[in-house]
Length: 288
Ligand code: NAD
Image (cartoon, rainbow, N blue to C red):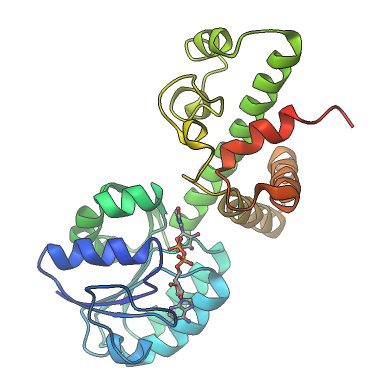
């Protein structure tokens, strides 16, 4: 397929490399530095013209809306606009409407799996869009990832992503609070891990990504909390969850609290650290 790939940052560049390696004819565009080994076009519209698929991997919904306004008129009717960025549900739906009005297929397909998943082609995609759009995207999602779930109509992929990450943010904070409490109660962290990982308090945050160094499988905590999944990206996703919750009047008290706790952590030195570094942050605090 002829693919235009817009947004070749930490995630987009390795995803584009995997598509190229699978034999696709790919041209990239980025407003920043061009990554090695990817042929680049002069503008977003130029790489979109004549492409079978345009993939976007951009920082936020405002940028996605601007890029879509430029590429949609340049694309050929029947081609696919596939956005893999994490953006607000409203932006995903607005872009889908623009694409539909222009006779294009479109899907929102945000990812889970981080830069390691992008490099290894093991991302998980959660997709929203018509069955025809998902079918058109599926062969490319298969190359870039290990699993793709069709969640529903336009915006459903973004909705699934923000709901998942709201659970993740809340459970990580809960896990970190429990380990910090255990420290003060004189309870050994390894003993707490052994109990929680096989008891009703278990979650991915303990069993796969334990925030306590030297406990459980290897995780960013064993590497000085280098990300991994950076705290500011968790904050971005929690803010998207609260923006969505406000828009539909959903009760998400813990999600809102998690967003405020990650905001404080990022402002108090957590920027650039893995989101599991919430543990040393909380362990250093008292109740006030
Ligand atoms: P990044 O900042 O490394 O990459 C974004 C790229 O978009 C940059 O290279 C930037 O120059 C480019 N860009 C910005 N405006 C542009 C424009 N108008 N036209 C063309 N290019 C433009 O970010 P990333 O880590 O690659 O993340 C991309 C998306 O994936 C985000 O929405 C993020 O939330 C999501 N995501 C990231 C991770 C992660 O671990 N990094 C995990 C899951 C999802």
